[in-house]
Image 1: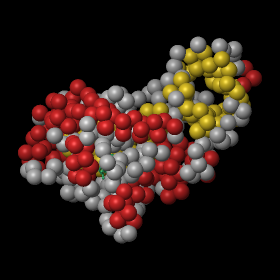
Image 2: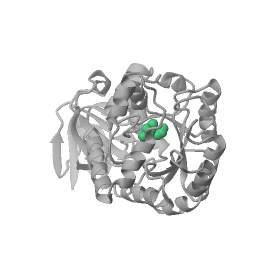
Image 3: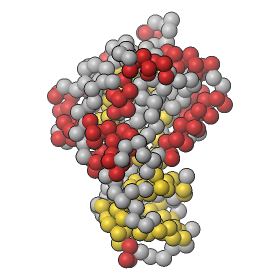
Image 4: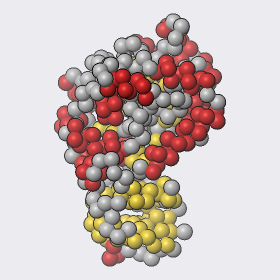
Length: 379
Ligand code: NIG
Ligand code: FE
């Protein structure tokens, strides 16, 4: 069954075809089979006239912590009243997550993935990190893998209460890694004061890489530090947050294959300064945008919201922010089949209830998804 999307007012491909007006696109077998001017559209089994709407690649949310139970709304309220964010609340979610059944974790995860999809997200990376025992980390990753191929082992999120840091790092790099490995594609570590220091972070990532996982890192979120440089040194696919960067960090990223993944939902929700997206782009760094969806620092599943923040607060143009939220996310996951709409790409796309991509930032908070196709099928 082929499907012709016709009457596209603005088609953003992020490929050699660039952005087309009055365009059409054919989907077949879950892939983009053809695209071009409406006037030359081939026949197909079905035809959907989108009546001048804009079509964009589906969002690639390359950073989310979705396997958890409970929420921390009271912690958010306290922050808005002046309390700082320290990451200390992670332990509250760990306790709730350990106490939850598989069914409860799965239902919460399904709800969040559904929310994300309805807002145009067609690929989502999902981390563990609220289990922090061998059994709970493996369980969280097994459940995450039911929803995405992009699963990330974050046993090194914080040192659980009552454990010695050196012993915990040994566990994370040993028995816990062995149990996580079958369900994970990536390894991650929270490199920060109060979490894991530079040497511990290197140890965790090296162990993951040796076990065949790709590396990503929570870097320079709450303070300046070595996180970004460790990412570059170890060839990590992505350095995430990048809130406090020195020019040395920016230079290191610019000369590397490591993507800087910016998570403005976290700055919004922790009332922190936004990362300097403009400076990164001007230096030639590849930038991705993602939600960081989690119950503590950023409880939003909305890529359009993060894109609007990037435009309003981080000096990115709407076109740059859209690229980062789609193609940039794909780069950070080292995927070339998503984040763009060339012939042969996965037919993951969103038809916007708007004439152009500008409306994503111009109309913040407004549900703008008309139709979302995942693998060529409406969600
Ligand atoms: O990316 N920084 C570490 N982890 C999450 C927050 C987790 C939490 O507060 O529950 C983040 O912001
Ligand atoms: Fe995170």
